[in-house]
Image 1 (cartoon, rainbow, N blue to C red):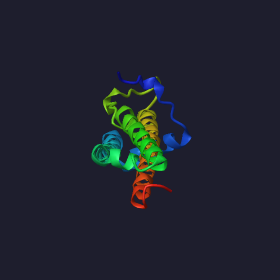
Image 2 (cartoon, rainbow, N blue to C red):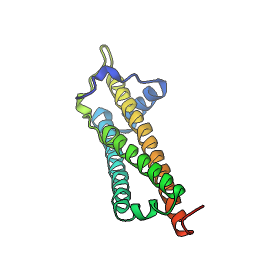
Image 3 (cartoon, rainbow, N blue to C red):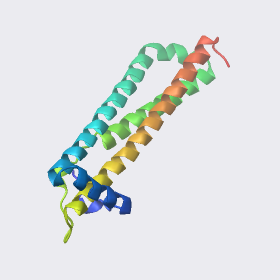
Length: 158
């Protein structure tokens, strides 16, 4: 279900960026094209994260039981890593890959093109912060997963 346009509350720097977009983007049409390109970058990078997370889960299906049987450290690191990777995947699916079309935004009452763009910039910035959180969760999960593998290679116990 789409978020209502009133949910975006831009701050001063987002209003400044909106005015800047209007000046460099040949008006509203150009500014919207620039923002849609930025959303496409977020979408593509989120899909890449989802692919990496899927690979980690798939590989674990083959090697996970053997690594987990090597010892308590390996078992805990593997389980924690998988939980973080899964959390990242869920956040990616419900966050960065969630769609809200640029055409769903409306000018606030009494607002101009810059006010409309500020709402979209606010939404983009929120998605960018969410993307950063998704990356952090995935990296933490992969680090724990690799720690479990290193523990396994070092002889089973640390």
